[in-house]
Image (tube, rainbow, N blue to C red):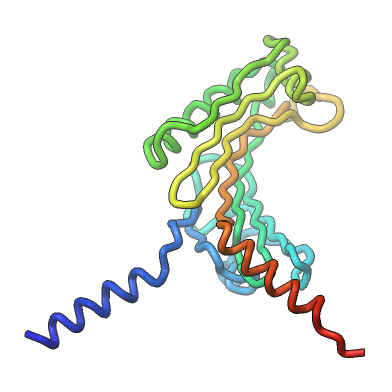
Length: 203
């Protein structure tokens, strides 16, 4: 009986050691660039692998979403994966915020089911209709985004216009959802390591 109690306590202690929330798309917070590449992501490209911030972009994920698009992952040195974004192009066949609105609202509903009501909603434009995407190029004209928060994660769903001139038969904007997991304790850990480096003198 005592052994069973001991085993139960150990299970609780071990499970409590890793209190990280579940990351999106089948990734894990803290995983490394090499671990990510080993997941055989389609079209994976790595940037600044040995830098303080490293990046991986890919056309697939271990647990992909229903839309076609790209995944963008950010890795902080000493912490591993701290940010994951999915982005999909919208409104290829017109200048109105139609397909984009449908996609945005669908994702918003899924996020609300999982993370609760958004803590902040900014959905306003001074010029709508066929000028919507031109308007949101400048935040002073308009923004369309929602922010969620749960278990230390920050999630931002937003609509962004494509850069440059908007062209027929090409997406006019992107609907993206960005997840970030970077707690105060994690930031302090990175800062303390950097301070120790500054103190060292090997000249």
